[in-house]
Amino acid sequence: MVGHVHLKVRDPELSARFYEKAVGMRVTERVGPFVFLSLSDRHHDLTLEGVGERAPHPPPGATGLYHFAFEVAGRDALRAAWQRLRDLGIEVDAVNQGISWALYFADPDGNGVEVYCDTRDVRAAWGGLSEPLSL
Image 1 (cartoon, helix red, strand yellow):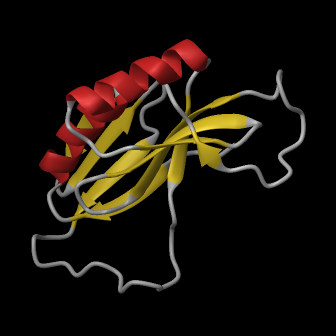
Image 2 (image 1 turned 30 degrees about the horizontal axis):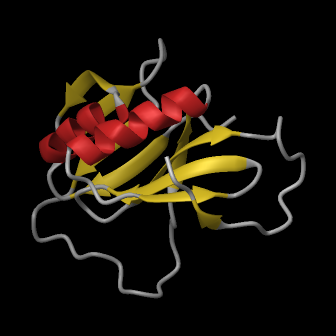
Image 3 (image 1 turned 180 degrees about the horizontal axis):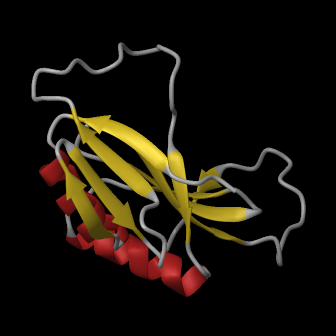
C-alpha cells in the first residue's frame, strides 16, 4: 500500500482547492508551505509542498512521475467523477483499459492524475487494451 503522495507545487492553496473540487479531498492540516489532504479517515493521502511561483516544470521527456491514481468504488462513482470534472471545465481523457475505466487529467502544475474504477469483473487480464471510453 502506498502511504501518500508528496507533490511540489507552485501554489499550494490553488492546488488544494483543485484537489478538493476535482477529486473530493479535504484539507486536514496546513503547516508552513505544506497542505495535507485526505480522502479517508487518514491524516493525509496527498501532501502539497509550495515551492514558489517561479519553480520550473520538469522538461518534456524527462524522467519522473507520469501520474498517480485514485480508485473509486465502481462505474457509477467514476461517472460522477467524470461529470464533476466536466462541470469544473477540466480537460479529461476517458480510457477503457479492459481491466479498468480511467479518467486522466492534469492538476494546475501539470502533474498527471488518474481516477479509475476496476472492471476485472468483466475482463480478468489487461492484454494491452487502451481505447477511448464513452461515459
